[in-house]
Image (cartoon, rainbow, N blue to C red; front, side, top):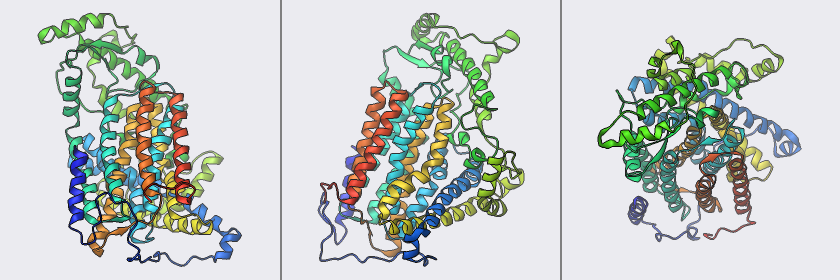
Length: 559
């Protein structure tokens, strides 16, 4: 119903345009109005075409890879910490912050790539990057999380249902916007408004979730885990913490705190390459997993104790009978008592994983780390000198400088990345859409891939999946329509999209989203190795079909 209302609004908006076409006319623009092809606003390359074909293009490819690393560093070490300070100062709820500021922090490279594609290179490299990044996130990232996770992770249906619902509506509106190769500012505004609706919904996410689950599970006995929005699923702690209780939620002395936001679990790519963080958590940070498992066990016992409390209507007695049959979790509690069970588990885990260590510019030990330090020094030192580190007391006071300066650096790195990608693609006769759909999409998503795998290895399966889909919502509802909206307002004309197979690529992306949901359901909401290989297979199928559409081996029905 919501999707139909949005399409009706789009149709009304297009009806007001003087050159409006039929509602579902996906045909190309009239040949009587040839589109004026604009030259990209890039400087002249240092190398000639002949030199690039002789091997000089390798410098552009290396430069692209260097910009991938630069974008990851500026986002992880400066932009996201500055956003953390803004969230703290404005006292924004974690769920709203995750859907807004943190999504912007993770998707900033795609957003600025889209802006440069609209205003500078005048091609569809931004669209290709966002569409390719979207399918990379929902297929490749989820597949990697399933394959590299220590244990089989259990997923809950609500986060996936919520994010996929908004994402599906966004893709349907996007498909409608692409029907005639022109994007009007009214269409961009409607697509951008979906992001506002998503943020408003996240503000009331928990009450809606409780009400919906209460409606679905009314008069039913369901399985409730202490891991729901609380703790990671670590090994045998998972199997021993499940119990069957009544549908009435347990009463607590105070309001429960939400889970820590995903940003608190984001480890910087620079730290992963050089300093203290072990991505696989097999070194010193094994203590983190050990502590998390202990707290998870305490949370499990806390849920069991809460479930046995009598409530009105006899539900507590029924809960007690079911709880008595549950397996007990052996715990070595401090002082041998139960008083410490009342500790705030969520706060403990939040403090445990929050990374507030300032940027470490010290010379590392080890030959490999020293080489890496020298390679990234041309990126890190200008950032370190120009941007205050908001994780220090002094830098925290200067967070506006870090916030605005990070945006400027991200725009600069994105400009160089798109410029060199265009040159490399032109030299190899690869269209900008294909470069965005494959190389740029994967390059800008690698930091999110690393972060999601780390989160999954800690046991936060729901967080890894929700982060992947949630970042796609930001890309589609902000990364694409914001540049289109600004272009329409500034120039007073629609944005022309030239990619022949992009409509079918978006439709294929929507189909892949359906396949992801069906695959997760077929694997009984478990992130196991089978699900991982299925996600990888779907990703390569998407890339192959999209390339076939772009190169004309396959033909889109809309053409």
